[in-house]
Amino acid sequence: MQSHYDKPSANMANYVPLSPISHLNRAAAVHGKRPAVVYGDVRYDWRMFADRVRAVAGGLQAHGIGKGDTVSVICPNIPELFELSFAIPMIGAVLNTINTRLEAETIGYIIGHADTKLVIADSTLGTLVHAAFDFLGKTLPLVTIRDAQGPDAGTVGDSDYDQLLGGPSFDGDGLPNDEWQAIALNYTSGTSGRPKGVIYHHRGAALMAMGTINAWQVPHYASYLSIVPMFHCNGWCHPWMLPLVGGKMVFTRDPVPQRIFEAIAAEQITHFGAAPIVLQMLAESPHSPSTPYDPRIRVMTAGAPPPPAILEKTGAMGLDVMQVYGLTETYGHISQCLWQEDWDDLTPAEQAELQAHQGVAFPMVEDVRVIDRETGNPIPMDGETQGEIAIRANTVMKGYYKDDAASAEAFSGGWFWSGDAAVVHANGYMQVRDRLKDVIISGGENISSVEVEAVLYRHPDVQAAAVVAKPDQKWGEVPCAYVELREGKTPSDQDIITFCRGHLAGFKTPKSVVFGELPKTATGKIKKFELRQLARAEGQS
Image 1: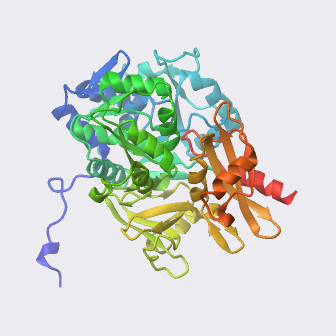
Image 2 (image 1 turned 90 degrees about the vertical axis):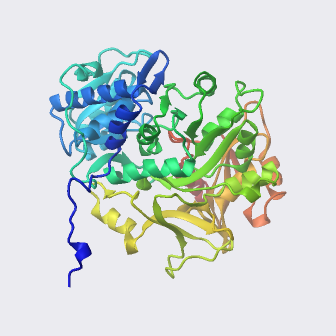
Image 3 (image 1 turned 90 degrees about the horizontal axis):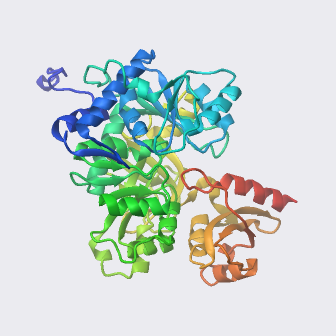
């Protein structure tokens, strides 16, 4: 028998699809005169920013772009990319931001696989885009962004971005009919094989923005420095968060330490996100402040487990760093290392060790568990037993674009399986030990490459480090350390091994050390798959 509670149905008065577009509409009305964008001499308030977004949306419609069309954008973090983050989904199209450091062949693959209808590129990247078209085997319509504060490479497209602003503006609320509608298509880093296209929906993007405000305690009128590349999980969805609090987005185009420190001082920055490698650059920069920031700046870090040594240094600078964890498939961060009051009395080193944990679920995440794949049960909270991180949330992707088999595998058993191995401590905080493929099994013992890397980062001569498995006739495989040294430092491989032996069990100590510059992605992640291939080849030779 149907309950009377089932009779009322959703209608326009009581159901509105969730979307970040709502955040912009409200910001224009509520925070209209508040600063939204700062980029050198360029300054827009929220009303001006919303007007520009609507003008760009109308210009895209004039180019024939509509619902379900993919628009690929390859551009550094500048105001135009911020505008496109709203303008493209406002007309029902899908935003595909592309890593600016990729080679032409991969860009060509992404543009083709994404069924791109229009490409928008910074003028400095026009040659790269045309080379990508050559790999693709066809040319697509290309709109050029000419950044007055960046170098100009001349005419590279069919039209300029400013022309999008010249026609009739989009008229409407810009909300999707269905909040499950795609808002963005983000490609994974492609560390093994071709990158996969991850589909985001309006609902997930809106909830990620709202959940981040809660978890990060973002106040009204925050001053946010744009460092996280917007091609990485749409800047961890932070651009869609700022309208909710009437915050301002500060751009530097090139996030080098000197410009970052100058922006912090000039714009009273309160928040920013950055990968651990960026935090390391800041901590070691000659431009770093002579006294700690007061008030302290709230910083979110993700992308790789941060070495405790780096967290200790940035803490001393006046940066309150919160470690978060997530993947492209989860719109970015879905767990946080939430500070606990009983940590206050610990030493800075002890605090840094705890801050390196990936912690507990974000407010908008339904469930994050570390599960034994063989039994299907959660692992014990002993800080030792490893399992795989599994996630259920509205901020999990719709699926992989044009790859039903990969989607089904990722969603097996009603969970999204991360591929990350972790332990859970007695306080319920999880800690990532490795990507499952990075766990080293030596003589039957599991070795966490992250644990060994944390020790290597304590060595005063080590700039960056990565540990991978190297085949070994006796033990099956052993740890091999790849080390990037600081300028002017020349320790021997035995010096590094001896240092590690003083902090690690013998079987965890690297058996070989290779010096040289480490391959990295644009977001600062070390390309371990390349190092694994090198170690495998050396071990088999």
